[in-house]
Length: 291
Image (cartoon, rainbow, N blue to C red; front, side, top):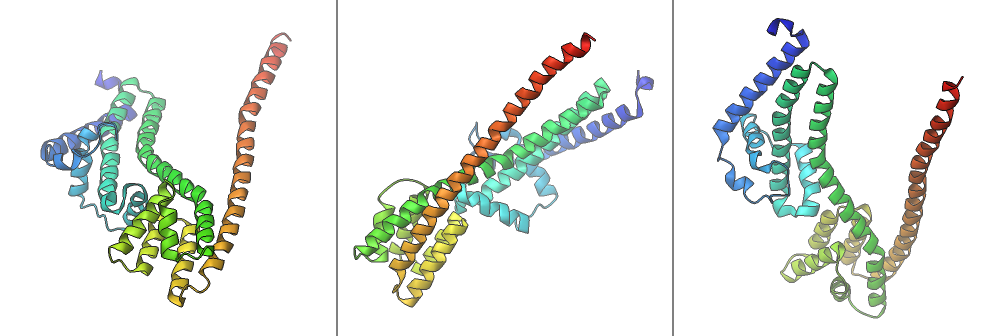
């Protein structure tokens, strides 16, 4: 039977066997070692999380660094949704998960493709593996995008409330605390956290800078930077500044709504176009078949 195998089948069987042996080695070496790391993960949070120690073991073998520029960038992104305290942990889990998926799915893909002698099967299996790996990043990116959109959606209202209270004679600190307690949402949570930090003795300027870092949105960074500059100057122009920013933010929100509606309209054109093509095919094929 082996003599009937093609060179491609033999190559895939060899690669699959090497990967299986590597998987078994890591399994035996690191089984139970990372239990305390895996235990906090929710059962439905990550697919196959119970064998993520495979990825963690390989990360240990290759001395994977969490200090690289790419790692720091991703950790910073994860911090937006998981908090800075747990961001590094979740990044480690995600990287370990990716490696686990690759090490587990690749040998299966090679063996199935070798047995069927079908290159299409291999391509589809590799695509499924890539999709599984990409899904982990997609989940994070999707959560970050939702969070940022929620913050941006509340931003104009927050500025309007701040401007109104400052015009009524309240100090920036009092107005901030009042607005932070006036509603719920991600932006209001970040405002409350800033208020707590200042109440606990954190320098006001540093608190506003960290607030901008946690939100990680251009408009919030500009807002925070302007507040810091005015605090350092003595709050003389803070009311006028926030009023101007409030007007600009409402204009930007209207513009964003307009853009989203236009994008939604353009997305509707795709299914309409596909339906039109299908109808044309249904009409044209019978005509040509009857000729």
